[in-house]
Amino acid sequence: MKILKSRTGNKLSRPLRVLSILRGRWDSQRAPALQALADIGHDVVYIDQILNLDGYRKLVQKIKFDVAILWGSSLVNFLQTFPGTFFLEEEGVPYVSLWTDNAIKHQVFLKEINTPLHKAMFVPDTRVIEQLKRRGWSKIFYMPPWHTDSNIFRPVNLVPELICDISFAATMNSYMAERSKWRAGWAPSMHLAADIVIQKCRETKDYADVFDLIGGQWDAGSLEFNKLSHALAFEQKALAREQLIHALGSRELNIVGMGTAKTNRSNIIMHEGRDWHDLSPLFCSSGINLNLTAWPKSCHHRVFQITASGAFVLTDWREDAVNLFEPDEEAVYFKSMEELPDLIDRFKKAPIERARIAAAGRRRFLNEHTAAHRMTELSIKLYELL
Image (tube, rainbow, N blue to C red; front, top):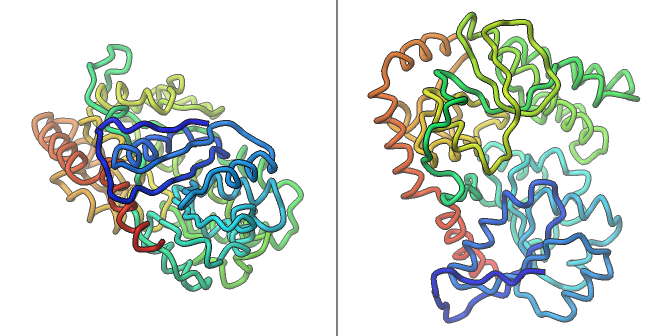
């Protein structure tokens, strides 16, 4: 257990006693948000070790918390690991959930906690919010990616072995490997539904929204829909990466990330993956940082990481994103894979323009999009909700 200390000395007239609990794989990426809450002046207790259910119960019985803040992945982990009534519901502790994953695909687990104690879901995509409301959720609020720490993602010196014109930070697995992994044991009807989504992805050369395409055929609150959504997230990610490589033609692309995919293309250079907190050296050493977004409208967290690093980002167009980083001024967007080669060729020859856009993107990030900004917004909302 950690009691997070304020680094600012800020005092609140009515600080909230906040509980947060580690349960998900990527919780360490979210932890800077908790520190930002402590810096505002709240009393933050972070359970950074896995306990059994009795351990969690004893803790909340011993300490009176005003609210628990759970990352979406941690909340789903709880609901999967401990079936039955959620323990915060049993103990009467109000809680909110903050999402970096698409909550639609987890409805089979979440439908049991559409309750008065689950005070709010904070979701980074306005289209997903519309979909959740159709599912009967009302306490949903838009919050763009909220966990990018400016102390982690920042301008750094170039790394000689990473210097390149074009890079892509991404896990690379082949489409067929992902398809085989996630579809094992499926009924024919599930394969047919999934193939509808994959066909759309192939036709548009963009991510296809699973809920929009097959949500009418499959109950989003079913385990089958959960499995479909989960598998298709990985299948589409693999397919999109293959489409990106194809779109670049003979242009050299440096890929940094985990995965087992291989290529015989001489222009594709595969580098070892880097820890998530050590990506700024890649971003700063790359003339152009590419990004692909698996959300319907959201701005991918990678865009925040790249701009925070003071680097140039070329990313796919998303309606929420362009309201967060101004097109051609703070980030550059492509609306189709067909546009990508010309944009790469243009900006590869324009280092001064790239530097201008990268500097403006970093200013926008520091002025509006840090974890401290998001947690200030959350703090205000928590007082309203509680």
